[in-house]
Image (cartoon, rainbow over all chains, first blue to last red; front, side, top):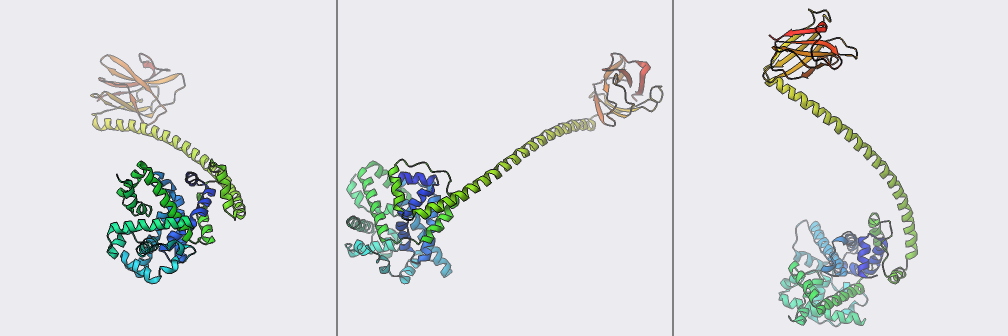
Length: 177
Length: 274
């Protein structure tokens, strides 16, 4: 099914299209969420809400503002980050800064176990240390590039170019596998 | 501009990660529209991210899917969505889902239940529509009544204003001195300045259909007919024709519709202006 057809079907509230969307994208979108929210139950809850949100807000999606997957992945990513923040707040009973929740995450769960999935090691194998670092923080820990820049005192431009370089390597690896 | 260095700036990646400001996003979209290389790179990168996400991801549990679709159940529209143009791609979709059979069964059951619900609600809808129409009719009748009442009210209000503002003379017309109806009693009030005349019938016998009571203003020029009196309308104000000058008022019985000159043999009541 072409992207145009998916979008038209979703807007028409067609069940079959929604199922197709689920079958094609649920794994990737759930991955986006799971990278940020480690608790499986909570991640599934976030995914449920985000997927429902995607189908409900499809009318607000503008084709001219980017591809469908990017739009959906951003909804998932933002839902996950929101959840993490609200969860931290309710657990700690105080307003945490983004640093708190990021540090909290690191101590709760290491990065390594989450990138152990099949093929992931191979995907990441050719990244150099700098690139791996960037992928870990931006992809797996939900940092924004400016947070990485501030947190680790890396110039913004450098963060950007490392993101770029890392994704280029991933691109090559993805094509190879 | 240097397209290659723009592509290598890392901006496109951040665009896909949703990390750009609104202004920067607009810029990326604008460039993508203008430079096919940028558009191509953006699409490649998205493909990469999607592939990466799919490869690194684990499918969410089946219950999550069930829950999502039961949440969405009420949103799905029953009628077939417009047929996608590429039928081939369509078949592929079905093939991709290994669990299509239980789906089809579940979907059929859902469709049957939903059809039942649709009929039920269609019926309800019809019923409500009828009720609504009936209410609309009631409402329009009431609006008519209200309008009528309002007009009457306006008339009364205007009369009341005249009473309050006017300088009225009260003339009591009595039948005591005449043969016709000894107990006839009609009150008249008259504002000579505004020339308004009202009467209130207190007691007048009913007449047969061939006759009318006619009110006369008797002035320097003799009696002038100023309207027919409705004897049935007791004790309410009846406005008569304008009179500027009169020494007395009288009511006679005249043939239906009234006469030009009063039939004095059938004089019922008379009252002098004091």
